[in-house]
Amino acid sequence: MTEGRAPWFVAMPDSAAGAATARMVRRRMGAASVVEHPSGRPWLIGEWAPYRLATGRARHRALAVVGEHDVTADRLDRYAAALTGAGDLDGLDERIPGSVHLVASVAGVVRVQGTVSGLRRVYHCEVGGVPVAGDNAGVLARLSDAPVNAARLAVCLLYPAIPLPSAWHTMWNGVDAVLPGHCLVLSAGGTVRQAPCWDPSTGRPVATLAEARAARRALDGPVVMAGLSAGGSPETDAPVPSYEGVLTDYDTFDLPFPYLHYRRRFEASLGSGSSVMLPVPPASDGSGAAPVMPAWATPDAVAAVGRILEAEAEVAEGEPGPRIVQAQVRSQAIAAFQRLATGHGVVLAVPDLDDRVLAAAHGPECSAPGGYGPAGQGRGPGARYPDEIMEAAEGSLLARMGLIDAAELRTALTRPADARTPAHRIEPTLACEAWIRNRRRDVHG
Image (cartoon, rainbow, N blue to C red; front, side, top):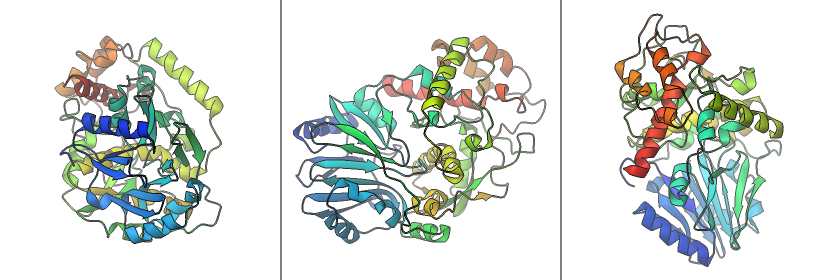
């Protein structure tokens, strides 16, 4: 796997057009591994550690699991032999310990699904007119030359968290997300559809949290177990975070990561033991806390976000239950921590969010306050922002895009840090500024 790059895969349709697109993907992305359809055409292209991928085959059927698991090829061979169609995969994910993407190729039909928590996401787009699916929105955006959607980036300025379902959208036009609990089906003829694939009421096999943790012990390489710390209030004595490198470190996050100011401390903790506590966003969808835009957002940005939230509130489906909602609200931040850990050669396992655990009604277990503590700025009354953060207002790409008023942000940064007023919280703005600067690096080098 290329050093510094997150694992990724792209699933291709079983067609001549898919095979031609696969060749282009390999040219654009450089060295990549390939797994073939039963037909011999390219099926999965990507970069992954050997232990992350397992495949099974039976005549014109093939299965693949990608992620944290202990499933063997022989076991997947048996599962593949029992398939009569792509629809037979419903519930198979709950028989596979761990946290995985499940991909199938059955008689020319490709099905891709992630996890109900949203920790394993699925995205899709067209590359050269051919529909493809993958687990990394940034990779698909690069392959399809998709432009950033400024209004979607503005949504990420919200504090304390982006509400569902708005949080599921990608930052790029033309790269679409599959809803958690749904799968994506690609036909050889080029059609694409989503279908629900999660129903925890069917009495399928489930697992305890202890069993989910045990599944990680079969993985090669260092594994760090992550607990989820809800922390305390922003006014408590949180450890002072590090802003070093917040605007200069390169990242490949699919979304702006509002915990960048904990990056240094988190990365240092990876080598200090076999477990780590993660700060997690509040489950605002479940608690009723209303997200707010920062005081320095432009009127156009506020209006655009308002239109998006209003439109998506009208079409939102029924909630899947409080434990699932809590898992989904937290999963996107946790996925970013996992990506950071991968860059250090470490598997950051979060068994609390496994499908089998959630199906057993063991929703994410909030540990006692500790670890990183509150998901806040951690700066006491009267504290000043460091010079590196002051630079966020200088040459701001968000300001050039018309999303923030640079003068208003500069004024706010000269005042003492205010962790008590949601509209004055700086973390989402820093995350968005860092994210768009890194995407500019992707384009211009």
